[in-house]
Length: 87
Image (cartoon, rainbow, N blue to C red; front, side):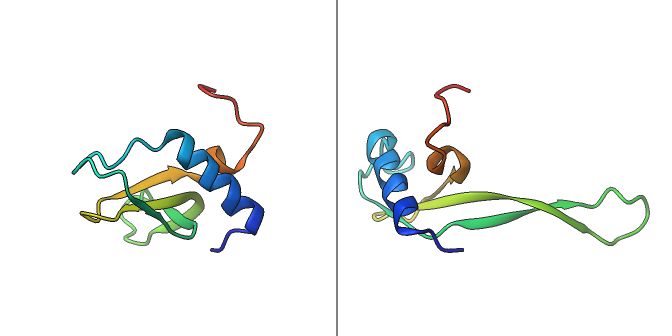
């Protein structure tokens, strides 16, 4: 799930302003990947073992360059310039 060039730019600006480094090893180096849509699974259909897939949550993965710890940031927050802090 690729990002448009303007979305990549906004994501980089957002991360540079807020990324504090890896919570696991403390390294400041991180690598941004493409957006990922994580499916929301619902298996509350009683005794039926089938699982329904509902609309997804879109996240931007950032991996620590030193230890590989993966952080997932909500893409809606990063890519929506109208999003308000704390809202």
